[in-house]
Length: 151
Ligand SMILES: [Fe+2]
Ligand SMILES: [Fe+2]
Image (cartoon, rainbow, N blue to C red; front, side, top):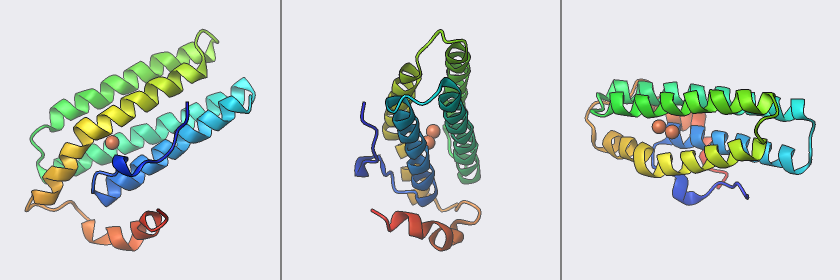
């Protein structure tokens, strides 16, 4: 599997795009760790790093939806918590060597790419047309612009 950042993942919300990019970078890091045959413990540490960031990202996205009064917040929150629950099970299986880290990477990457395209893109569209603005949006260009300039 080759994990990379693709322009098509960009949904048009600077904060979410930045976080997605970071998340995919962590998957790529995991991919490299697996391919370079790093010790099981090292791989598990990276999995935890990616999982914690996914958790952070979900809360961040949920807060954005909340601040915008996004009508599908509850439905979206369920999707996030289902993913985290599945992830917990997978991580526990990997730590007991009953599952391969590649399977988690494949599952996470597939889930994320589909979720970004189908669900997160709807938030970005809603945010673009909403009169209500997220808290601190005016800071985006100051703090996040540098990341977007690296394309
Ligand atoms: Fe989401
Ligand atoms: Fe997302």
